[in-house]
Amino acid sequence: MKSSKPTHHIRLLPSVDEIIRNQKLLETLNQNPRHLVVRATRHVLDEKRGHILAGALKPDNEEDLKAGIISEIIKLVHKHNTPGLRQVINATGVVIHTNLARALLSKSALQAVEMAASGYSNLELDLSTGKRGSRYAPLEDLLVELTGAEAALVVNNNASAVLLALGTLARGKEVIVSRGQLVEIGGSFRIPDVMAQSGAQLVEVGSTNKTYPADYQQATNDNTSLLLNVHTSNYRIVGFTRETTVRELAAVGREMGVPVMSDLGSGSLIDLSRFGLPYEPTVQETVAAGADLVTFSGDKLLGGPQAGILIGKKEIIDKMKKNPLTRAIRIDKFTVAALEATLREYRDSEKAIANIPTLRMLADGPAELLPRAKCLLKKLQQLNLADVDFKLVETISRVGGGAMPTADLPSTGVEILLQQTKINNLASCLRDHLPAVIGRIQNESLVLDMRTVQAKDMDQLFNAIRNCLMKI
Ligand SMILES: *Cc1c(COP(=O)(O)O)cnc(C)c1O
Image (cartoon, rainbow, N blue to C red):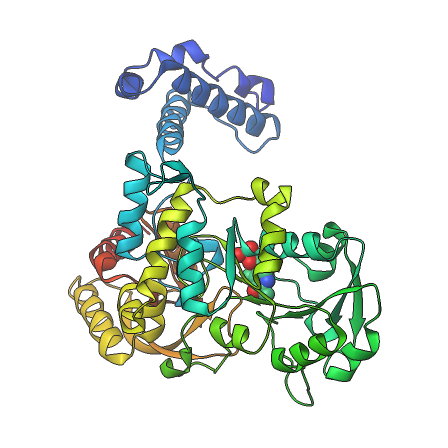
């Protein structure tokens, strides 16, 4: 009679050496560094040992155990060989999806990045004089031209732009903010915390739903360095509300002799109400309204690379350029290249909408979305699979990136209807696929929103769904 004590089962575990010498691992060993295979072998053996000791695994056949171990080793080595960062087809309908890397670059931005990455460039050389130049110069010229601001600076992301602004202008001094704007952006970026980090002292005024110009005026004193307006990106206070506009704030600022800063967060150079989205002041309008300093992201509504853009009065921007922190959060050449090309597109707003993927996706209507959905639907139906249904559905896409949280973008999707347990298997298989596919599980089905699927990815999307439906 066989004993079922763990020690008995442990004895069935092969040694690392025995496994490595197995014929079935020969191909894996030929294609990979030996130490990688040995490491994977140790890992799988340790795991099996743990399972046996915990009573979760009771093998009684040495050959079966060995075969299972080898197949897990092969899988693990394969996993180690797959890049951690990989292509994802975004079928969620969330255009600026922070978890899926936000903005896609335009063709011109991609070309610029390739140029900058594959050869030398005049990043810090002024070609007209042969002297040292500034990496910010081409960006500053374009930003001044496009926004009407006096000067500009670009840093790593908008969070660092806000930190730099507060640290430069308000260290050891007071900054007045409305109680309705003490936002948390996500990833623990909270205005009160950023304020503390920068050495500025937060002075809250007004109430959650109402803040008047007089509230700022009354709180201003000799130690006030800044009146700060923060875009409440990812939430809305609706109903009985009153926010002080940038224009009103600028009037208070002028009267009291205190600069006004507006953290726009997303910040768009184009009025998106033409796509049926809510009207929001553009970057240019915020400058024209009298803000002395405006900050916004490069990879939200602008549709460029990750960056934090600061524009405003020359005197203020000059102070920030001299702050040593600016050197620590400076942008690299890829960002300079991609952002310059992206900004160039904005010289002609029609061109920008056609060429910048973020804007194009926001602009797409039924004429673009419906044919994409119908094409995918037809190909899926032609697979003639049992136990699965496909349907064309109306869905709602979102802007995302913490922008316009209440805005609904009517869209079209393909719905995959399966048994509940199979839906989860399908979603998990699609996440594991190369490229991965992320959809939306909704009413016990999987919905693929066509707005965020790139035309060039349609075939890959179909292949991924087909492969996974065959597997689950
Ligand atoms: C998104 C956002 C930020 C942070 O910008 P990042 O580019 O993500 O660093 C700061 N402030 C507001 C209002 C935002 O919406």
